[in-house]
Image 1 (tube, one colour):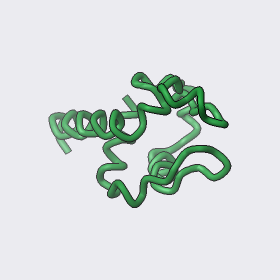
Image 2 (cartoon, one colour; image 1 turned 45 degrees about the vertical axis):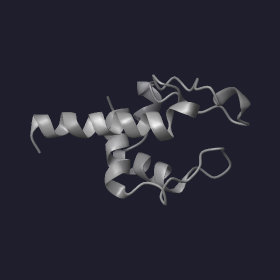
Image 3 (cartoon, one colour; image 1 turned 90 degrees about the vertical axis):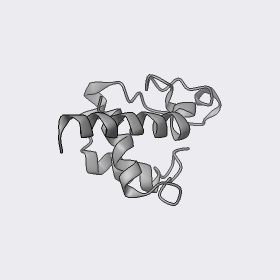
Image 4 (tube, rainbow, N blue to C red; image 1 turned 120 degrees about the vertical axis):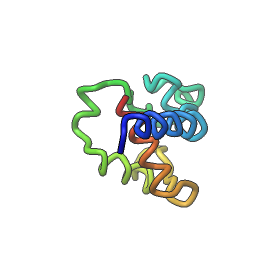
Length: 94
């Protein structure tokens, strides 16, 4: 995959993130989206590189697809295909 393709993938991921993730995780990934305060568990800061380094891209894709039991993180596997989830992961990694 060339550089331009990676950029396009991240751009698409940014749009998908804005649509499906930003309400809880925040526009900049700080865990401060408009719904965050109302949740029983605060969304993790996706912008925290130390915390995010614990997860592989596969781990993140699985969390997006299946949700996170015991937290308000819903499963998006029915709403998003694996390519779309991969684009979100690519964006989050930036």
